[in-house]
Image 1 (cartoon, rainbow, N blue to C red):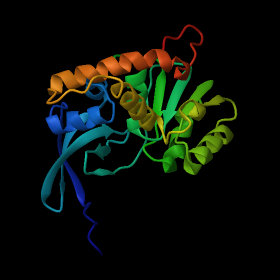
Image 2 (image 1 turned 60 degrees about the horizontal axis):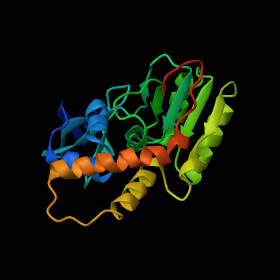
Image 3 (image 1 turned 180 degrees about the vertical axis):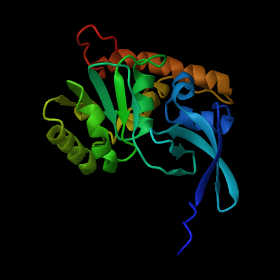
Image 4 (image 1 turned 90 degrees about the vertical axis):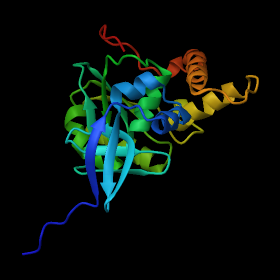
Length: 230
């Protein structure tokens, strides 16, 4: 009998997100610190005997999606991530960066509706039992063929739900996170250039840019239904 295969990537530990390199990476993606702290962890992992660290986003089966400036991957088991606030409305995303970007654009401190992150479009069937119990599903998938197909599959697999395709709100951009980055960059280019800006001031500048964007992106916010706060 063959011995069981040993995964190449092994999780060592997770802790609150504090490392400047990871905080800086998320800031470069337009993610505000309060959102990152609420939904992400600083994960130490090992690959072939070498230790690394990354931003970690945990799935419902205990696996992790891992991101850093130089790494994009994850640990087993692969699964979806759901947030259940007992709402009749759910927002759905392909990846967790888009989920974090949405929260950075809308409500950094809170989320009152439900959410589902596929962590890969191949995981859509795993999400259907959770998604289909909601009368209203807002789909924030990528503006590419995979995103189009996933949206169509979601409509087919959840026939009793109203599936609202939100992709046209960020048309011209690959996904919600790319939309956020482009809008922040556009606002930053209007500001006077500064040299040697401190990390604290950089984060504050990011917050200010996001506050200015909220009024412009109000149409992305799912409508309130049955008195549920979003």
